[in-house]
Length: 421
Image (cartoon, rainbow, N blue to C red; front, side, top):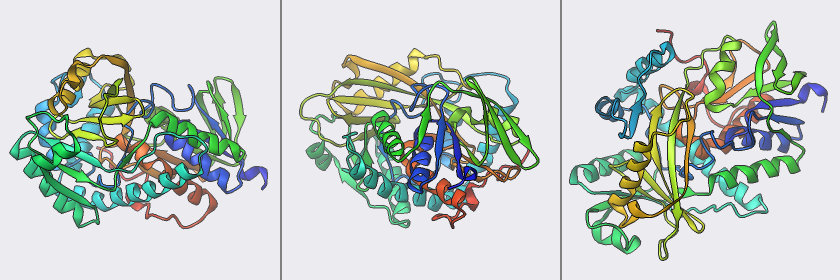
């Protein structure tokens, strides 16, 4: 291939690594620039819940999310919290989020999210088979637990809605739940099993994909932050990095997660993405706990087995690019785990983490060519589903750059879909 086929990927998270892998599989020269390290600790993937969720068809923006969110917004211990600040970008994001928290936009987004997650689940299985390392990949389903009749009834309605899109979900009574989870608390009255879902150890999974990409010729440059971008006409021509300038002879992929908007502004692109901080607490895995991820469906805390460890993860905190820890939120995650798994709230933490997930106002990612640049593709804004959607995003970007017909209709994911308010 000629020098014009060279692709520079900005961002070494799960989306950047998967993009590099599928481009390298085409035989293209690829360079990944990462401001920190592959699967950086402060990004959205490093120590997240590790869930792969083809059964998750409900975008972040939904009527239920808006109703709950209004009650939670300024409660620092709630599942959805906004750190008070005067920020025009945040205010616009909230206005767009409210516009998308309606039945019609949610219904339009459901099949899109299903297609992305379902396709990506198959690609994760292929990656696991190709990798020469064990990164904890399992496809054993995902069990959501409930402690109130109201919560279980709402979950049952979601199962029925998701079934129309081919999702394999089942409502379980308390007896069946305890067969699967003997350690469930007495408060648990039932659950919902999504059988297609899986889980992995997220940082190991991203590192495995990056290794596969490197074996096929991709180059990863850590500690190389893109500070500025130069253009000429409709082309990106140069990237100014913390380690010097890099001429652009081919294409650029912007896959910098929550750090994409600042670079977008340099390119006159409107990328309404907010960094949504998530937290996790990792403990030693108790004996007898099955290889089955759990979820407190009313406390919004995931409980994922990862080898000899167990991870509690959750919360969504809109705080810009602030990576400080709010300890009340860490305590809330531990309490949420203990509500459905006996004793979990008291287990000693081995690791406490927080990272920024890149959230769009409609809950769907932004994937496609820049409307202003012929050689720039954007792949960002995956909310809490970056790990789940990483492979399909990488494959779609490779198809876009190759000029092939994308496997999934990208119209709902276009970069310029959000109106100016």
